[in-house]
Image (cartoon, rainbow, N blue to C red; front, side):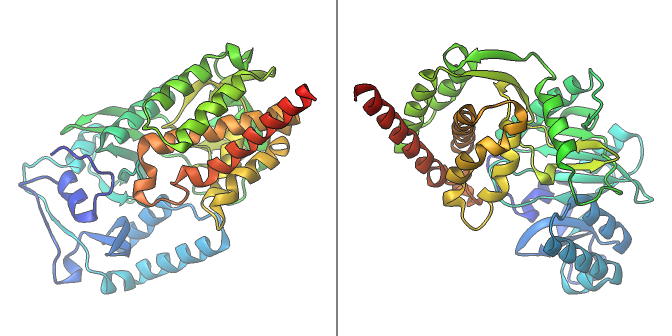
Length: 401
C-alpha cells in the first residue's frame, strides 16, 4: 500500500505495520488488547503495550515533558498505567499475528537479532508526521528507536537523517552526542531507520545554556566554514531555487524581494553546518554532553546561528502569539546571536534569512494544511518582510536626501 497522507489514524497505521494476513481488531474485552491508545482513542498520539509495566516504560521513552504541567501530566498517566486504570477505561487494539506473516516487529527482530515489543509514538498531526517506535526487549529494556517513513516526505527525511548520523560519527566531538545508526533500509516500500537509544534516563529537565551553545558551535564548525558576502554565497541560490518550486503568492513574492535585499547587503557571513530542528524537545544535557536527536533537516553551508535562532523561535511559534513571533525574533536576534560572533545588524539579516528558510520549508511540506501550530507561515513572516521593505525605503531616502 502506498501512503501519501501523513495524517494516518491509528487503525490505518497498524494495518500498515501489521499487514494482512495479520488482523487488527478492537476487542470488547479491554483485557485482550495488545496496544492502548493515549491520550484518547479519538486523538491518538501514542500506542503503548497493554502490559502495565511496559506501557509506563514506553511512555517514558516517548515523551520528554519540559514544563511543570507536562511533568505532572506524565506522572499522572504513568501512575494510571501502573495501576491499570487507563486500560480499564480505554478500549485498545488487538494485533492477531499470523504465524508466518510479515510485520514491522518481525522485521525489527531480524535487524536486532532478538524478540521485541514496541510502543508507537505518533505525535501531533503535521506534514512530516511519522511513527516512531520504542523498540524494547522482553525485559522492557529499550533496545532502539525506529522511525518508519511511510510518505515521500518522511522517507526523504529518514534518508537525510541516516546520512547525517553516519557523517557525524566519522569524527569524535567532545560536547555533541548524536545517536548511532543501527540499520537503515526498506521494508514493504517504507524506509526504516533504526537508531541506538540515547541515555536519557538520568537527564535533567534543565538544559545548560552553555553546553547547548558549545554544542551548536561545535556542529557549526563540523564541516567547512566559509566567510562570504551574501552575494557570493551558494546558499541564497539554493534558497531561491527552493522558492521557485512554490506557487505564486504574496508571501512568495515578498521572499523574492527579501532574497534580493540580502544579495545587496555588504555584510560578510560565516557559513557552516546546522542541525535544522534543534529544539528543547530534541535534546538533553547529561554530564556536560549535549544529547541531540532528530537530524532530519541536517545541512551544510548555511549561516552560522540558524540553530540558535530556531531554538529560540519554535517555542514562540507554538505559543500564544504566533503572529508576532517573527518580529519578536528579529528584535531579539542580536542577543540570541551575540555569542555566535554576529554583530547586531548582521544578526538581524541572519534572522530574516532563517525565517524565510523555515517558511519555504513549511510551504513545501504543506504544513498549513495539517493545522499545526504556526503552520501558516504568512502570519509570522509577512510582518518581518514588511519591516525589511520599510528599512529599504528608509535607506533609499537617506541616500537621496
